[in-house]
Image 1: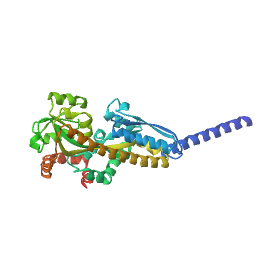
Image 2: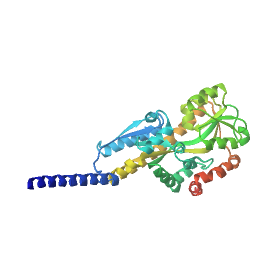
Image 3: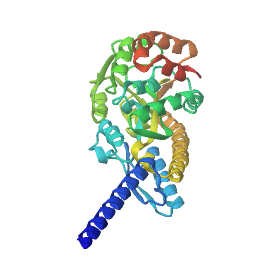
Length: 342
């Protein structure tokens, strides 16, 4: 009888120790405690190809992280939205859910998760990159980071796809009147549809792979995109005019899944913040250098550039004021003020 009691006592003690160990492990995972020296093999998604500034920045982050941790943290990069089957919208959803660990995505794409992200690309919000840097380095950037945390993404830094410019095959665009009835291809974002209708254009959406042929055949007259897209897609071969109006800014988010980030040790979190910020700043730097060279190349090819005067830009801004009236409640007044505070 005594032997049986001893055995039962041992079993009970073992069960208590096992339960205690399980509870402790769970607590450590939730708080990030005990995560020191943990090895990680992470997947990072990049929307565009491996010759892009996006990829080069991701590569810098991966190389720096590998060097700093002696290979303990490894980041494998997947360009061209390989992890989401080419669907960038699905790409941000995978990151938020933790099925992808890190990514570079535009806030325009994040608008699928929450329309408030669209505030960063509001019409004629920024005059130049000085205004961009001030806002994203301050209150505006902090506000977007807060919304991203709500969606399950921790922001490591902001990159740049650039200002979106407009090209066409008919004439220079100097005022809203020059856009009357012009068929312009735009991304499938409701705000852009509303915006171009306010300007008097006939906006149409289509996959970007169809744009070159549609311009060539005259199905559409023009399109809008950052310089890098215009240059790399050789749209100068089917478009004669470009207006440098900086009408909408396209920022990038270098993000990491929040649940993953929160589970890391404080040291690893700080390392990701430091190296992520450096990688994002590097992407902005090389993107701006590249754009200057691409503009020179497009001009050399014969494309005619036009830079609107301040007075002409005011006429565009006045024409799109109804967009602010319609979307200020969607974006939120405080958020909009954070971006207008330049």
